[in-house]
Amino acid sequence: MRLAIFPILALGLLAAGIPEGFTSIFNGRDTTGWHISEVNHHGNTRAWSVKDGVLMVTQDKPGNGGIMLTDKQYKNFEVSLEINPDWGCDGGLFLRSNEKGQGYQVMIDYLEGGSVGGIYGEGLKGVKPDNEKARGWQKYWKKGEWNHLRARITGDVPHIQVWMNGEQLVDWQSPENHLIDGATSGMIAVQAHRSDPNNPKSRWTPGGYHRFRNIAVKELP
Image 1 (tube, rainbow, N blue to C red):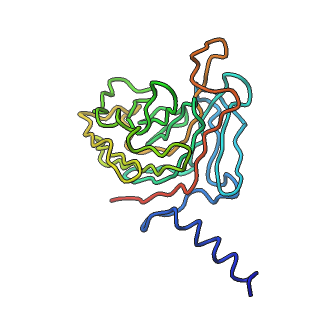
Image 2: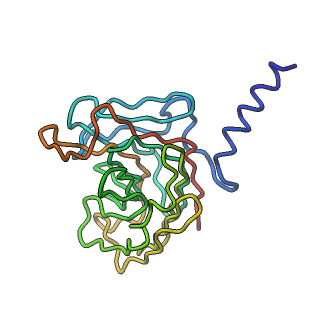
Image 3: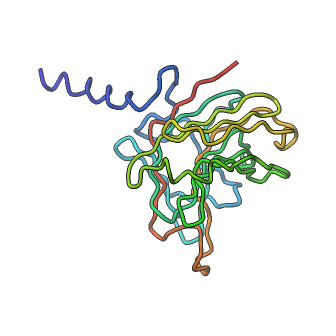
């Protein structure tokens, strides 16, 4: 009887991290449905792994970061995930990204002077979001624990909202669509930032990891 109940309990615990109405896009076992970009300017690190339901990434050699993209493209959606990066590591959550990683980025820069939850235009020109409240992200961050991040993007001219642990950090209406070639959809991606191993202020801690789990999406009209 105990053996029969355990898998049910495990599934229940896994589902507990996914909000109602969202569909999981990371199975917790492998990277099915995702792929590594070979053309991202941060690199093409192969140091992605999955353990105990967690997607982890580091640099496979000094300075070589990269992104992992969904195979599927999305237009209007919310994405929900939990993050637990090591201190000193820079990364991000990409919205409407192309294969090169050009898209709107929710920053996960867990380092001195960094930002978690603010918006950045990765490879895009003229993106000037209102990140004022996001600069106070440390007030809502649970150090050394899993933190919930949720981002919503809607509209051909995007309206982007970001929440951390239930607290809204960003509510930004872009004045224009900055995506390459006027795209209105794209992939979701997670990132390990490249670094300069010769720079003592590099944006990655040697041996550090970004960690993601319970990645789920709710597609919107």
